[in-house]
Length: 372
Ligand SMILES: [Zn+2]
Image (cartoon, rainbow, N blue to C red; front, side, top):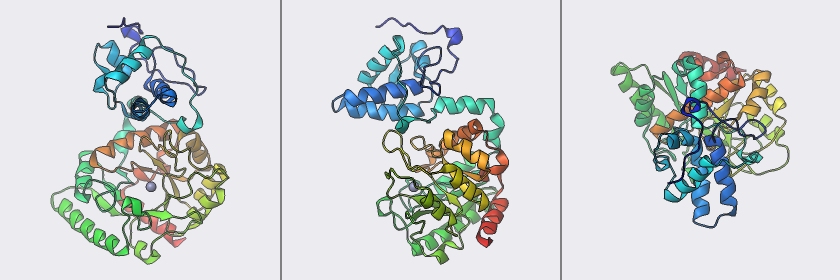
């Protein structure tokens, strides 16, 4: 066994993290720092270790506890997702002798760890209790693994009043996108489930929605008539996401598309995989505010899109914000923590966030956007 040289138990509860300049805060290495060390180590590792390091780097943002705390308590790091014997040895050596942690490159910047989100929520407990619903999730109708009813039951467990079912639209074949006819069938299934839940005395309402695939010109891939009866439409870009040039016009075109209420996962970034698009964000958010539309905080840990830096600009512009976990199974509804924590840290007011409205107010807003 290696000697354990770490912060004293008294300091163990200190939340350590990398500051804006990438410097490690006082104390032992945070999960965020461990994630960065794993990603850097992956760059010079050979397969299959490289793959394991990359995977653990990503998963570190979902670890439920600080790795340093687990070591201090004499437990095994193998309790953590994506950590096996080899990675345990590597991470343990870092925690015992903390190396310098380099500033993350942009492709890994502005991601919150699960422990950071929990700390923020612990300081603002009323947010978690007040959030009324989740506005992005997928089911077996497209690429999710749960049924609509599975998602609804999990949402009831969380105390929600509404969820929006946002399966992919037909243009996104790779994600099993649904066409107009399937969307209609899905609406019928939702009506049946809503009636059933109501008869059981539940207050949750399942909203009919879609993750509409929009092209770089802002055009959707579905007949607008099929979308008119939905409660809410998310518009999302899924193509040409590695463009380096300014994409402001694409965003403005997407926002101006009359069927779109919410711009989902706006940048299209994915941790350590894709940086996402760039734009004159102040202008984009100003246009969203003028049109009274929303931009999303996709809470999926690898996405966290919009991120804090952009959310501060969105706050200034005053546009509406939507939280969506982008869940692909019922357990992922917990990713709401990331959306909530990002909004709190960016100082977004609750009255700007769709998820704090009740279902009727949300429908009224969606209708008023359509009537503009
Ligand atoms: Zn998407």
